[in-house]
Image 1 (cartoon, helix red, strand yellow):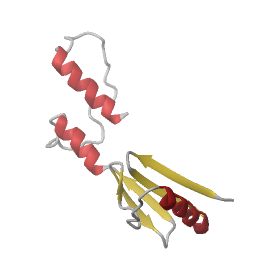
Image 2 (tube, helix red, strand yellow):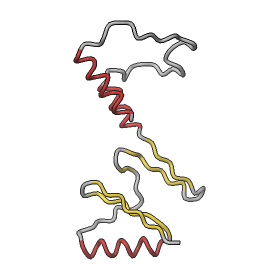
Image 3 (cartoon, helix red, strand yellow):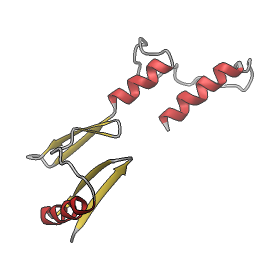
Length: 115
């Protein structure tokens, strides 16, 4: 089975797949059509850090910088992490004061960033 994936974002490409010969052929075709620079094994792409454990056959992805940016934008960068942000068995009601428009927008942006 041959599988080659080409991830495209703007002018950045990430090419991978199996077998290696198919990936090499894809790179050859791309080099014939575009100016291509091979930067080797990827470590960062689309705000994700990439760690390849070739011996273990593992691929790890993490987005620490993206999460840090969301926390800074929401003014929570100095907050302490907790397992549960509220007591267990809290009864949530629809009563209360609505957020001011500016705060409502900031809340919607923070939640939207996590989706």
